[in-house]
Image (cartoon, rainbow, N blue to C red; front, side, top):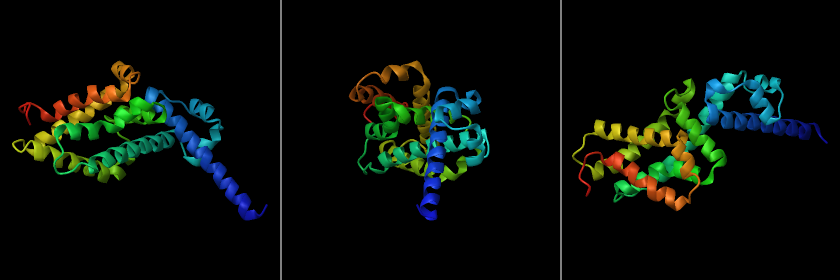
Length: 212
């Protein structure tokens, strides 16, 4: 084996360790939040030694922040993919389905998708310091939602529409952590969509007439 091949192997092994630590951190963060996670639990779950956290991330906090940032980015990418697909004739029901799609998919599939959503929900009120890097994606998501909301609710000012969007996001975050979320995870995906989309659409609609 050449020196270059050995170097590639070490790099691959290092990346596997990094990925394993981040996955373990994400799973534990989704269950308990950042205050309830210990270094030993993460390394035991990842099958790594304690020194690996310091080597690859610098500290437990840096590892948790990296996992949280990863979760936020995955969530935003999935939501933007759904929102960007909405055409000029999209209804509030269409917007609600797109806005809630990452949550509905996570409830239906479980595993790391659900861990991502639960982590996003837990950090919604206390985002990591480095999350400013994602401001562009948050702004893009907000603009796409406002585009559809403004077309469907022309008499409602932008400040009110932003408030309703934040309420809808808060509702989904609560669902990720509340017992009802676990109940929904046990039913078919079609039923999750049938029950959840009208509720999110209602948050967007506010007190507007039902025909809007």
